[in-house]
Length: 509
Ligand SMILES: [Zn+2]
Figure: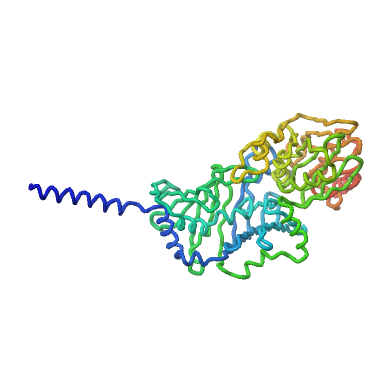
């Protein structure tokens, strides 16, 4: 072996090393570019302005509709799912049919824009169109709100990763039982998102990040994309499975998709008749329609879009029964009450039951300092709603908590009375009502006003079902002198309406 040969050998070794590093796995950005190529190419993806995913069927969980607070949840069944995304104007819409046991609803939640300003339209079959702020959109579809379609769609994420300079060397990580190339990127929102690239197909098989859910709070979330199919030259996933906090959240299999179809944009049109309300919602910030009507001295009905509340006036404060639907509704309610009752803060917010559509505004009322009052048995559902951090982005309660201004929660067993200056609000935790176990009934004895939700819809002519029959029995057992029945759904009616409906139901059976 000569010296010269040795030198050449070491030179070759160095060159070899260099070559090896050059051929080592590409950066996350390079993998994103490869994924984009596998999806039809960067130019094709950049040319996608709208996507309409159609004919979806699947499931949705985490709806909080159990009979007992500790029950296992039954999935809601989704059909006719259409998800429309306008990538140019950041608009998105969820449209679906959901069924949970006997309950079924055709819902449409639309995040659209007027002169560039975001606004929400909620369209539920059988109800008038509701105009709300985007924060006031409530969804039982594949996502918490249509805003998630904008933030968490495969095209947007791949383009962001392909456009973000990265020297990060992806790791090998197992996903769904096979090794994937895993790297992270940063979205325009500043969020970090982890990407799982399929080493064979080069496609994006999954991504993970933190989603802040309105009811569940911060959840480590994993989106699995599969069944990529060609749609006008772009390859798009037709099956999307979402896991939040390690538990199944939603899954949808779409039958077809359309790209840049002008017809699909019709969902974003604001009806002429809704324009004034749209302007109002945009100007208000967090907004959902709420009007206050007097029921009796010191008792008011807060009529909302679909989930109403009762307001009881005390000498120096107010108590609200039912913090329903969304925090946008609670923010609106708090504003409306502050105007009508200056210097009377909402000191208490009573919970009738934990079902998420009736507790979606709990955090919003705790954020304005209300003490949440609830049945002990509801604690396993209510504590996580109030106590899980909401940081991406921070919600009103998170901010109030940081400022030391948040309301607390207290639990009662059996009966709780809030009483001051001759006014009182009685809360009864009642067992034996089928809807939920237990159910809290609220009663204002001075006015003879009962508030109940989901059991009987006063003022609507609705028939009495098993819940209404159980409600009447409970009122009689408790010996409450009820003259007026106010509903979480429906309106306000004389108590005799319930008695008549129950008598008719019993006669028919
Ligand atoms: Zn309910």
